[in-house]
Image (cartoon, rainbow, N blue to C red; front, side, top):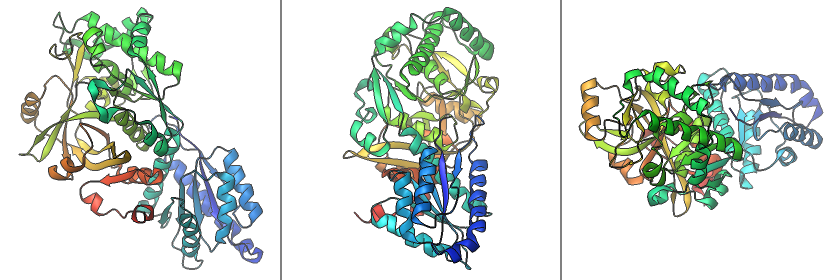
Length: 498
């Protein structure tokens, strides 16, 4: 998985008779933190973070310039500045300016009473902030799991920001059915995150489908047949072997064009041109987001249905903060007041991984059924994918705009563990042929309804609230954290002073 190197260095005292006594200890601390970050930032594909340690502590103008230049040449895009003793705050400027000003910065100190590391942190970090540099601060012991997790969450957020900054979103067809909340809003997106878009007409997808290797299509078709067996519900009209193969051609065509144009994530308009004249995009979108296909394990490629750009960006950020897991895309479909919960389902985009959260596709496909596409909406036919998401803790999020200013709605919750009869009853009230997440949120229905930006919500497993909050604060996006987690959040100074 793509990521960016993290630099780490120790701020130190300028006086030789002081730093000469603490240099060895300080370098030991920096290297221990570097090892902790490397160990904690393992991705699902086995890759990890490249953490680059400054060769010495920063104790003079020349060492500040030297270490900053070292980290810059190593490609570092974010910096952890450690504090263990008093340091001379003005040295931060030749260091940061040598490395690059537009980078995420974490000031990290242990709570050491013998040497005033906290004093040095506040003096130095305060100098950065009074000049308008957004920074984060963490004080705690390296051996404290809670402190270590804060650091890892910040590093995940910083890597997500600095990785997506250089990426391009592949927009196949433009925003669907006039959904303006899904439009790629160029200026606020580039200002906050740096990524841009390349728009490709869906006609090129269709033409590329005509050139797809039919041997590869047959391999994919046979693989799906093996995975699903009689749970491919052919009806002789909407879902036939040929309409399913057409969906597979679309998947291969998208993969081909993503590689050709260098798109790191993408969105497929689908409605109405493809869904009425070519095929439904559900199977291609699912397989793009999956961590495997018939050729074996692969990195999930975020693909947003209905070419919802803010959905795709949110999913890409969720992928990075989770260490490479697939991200979910759902319609905010139905509130269930008797359960104080939601049925979130959408015709496309649920990665099959969420059926059982296994990296063995057979484990997931064993819980999946392919249904004929609904002719009422999708006249060209193909398969709709149906399953219930595995129960467990989740984080839900969505990037939105208020008056052209970006914000992200963030909330904790869970995919609910319901009995089969209840699941069937709920699914029948919306659409039993689509994938479902029965979502329980920590926020109320009223709070969700009052601030959520649109009809599409994204999700990932586990608790990523703090990582997403750090991410927003780094970029200047306003995090709108719902539920009790929002009440506990301390807004940073740049939100309090306008």
